[in-house]
Length: 246
Image (tube, rainbow, N blue to C red; front, side, top):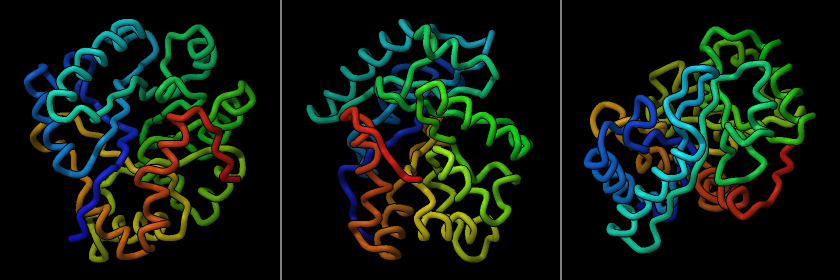
């Protein structure tokens, strides 16, 4: 396995008590250690934002990020944690974005958005248009979960419309014996995926997993192309740069 270091995780539920992720600071600390051992050096914390029922305000999330950052620095002084949200799409979410109730990825112009699994392609397309027109970039969370996106050409159309696509590391581990695994690997290898994330929720069944998928990606597409998904695109967002993938 190729040993990778310097990965940036754009999708992680690591803030204790913020959602259904880490249950305590002790578990968050354990998840941090596991992530570091997987080669992850920067994490954007993305607690769920569900209209009308979110546990934490933006201010509380920032406070938790500061506390988790203190724990990360105990592991290594260059281990960095940033704030964000994973937003369950709702039609008036641009108002919450503009008012600062929804946190963008690392205070960038990009927001991580998820949908119900059985969402229609029409709704996703319209959501991308809405968020883009409002002046934000939409990163669609775990694109592998939405059956409507498996139809040929749809990912390409969303990218042309302004969407960026995130896939979970674990989905690349399923391999060629799984139809889902083959589809996921093909999208990553053919350049339709812009970010990978652990989507970690705990230190057990949903612990951070990145090393095996990162290693496969490097073998498949080469280190330069792989690094675009593993760190470069996320690094550009954190640096305040805009990505043009259309």
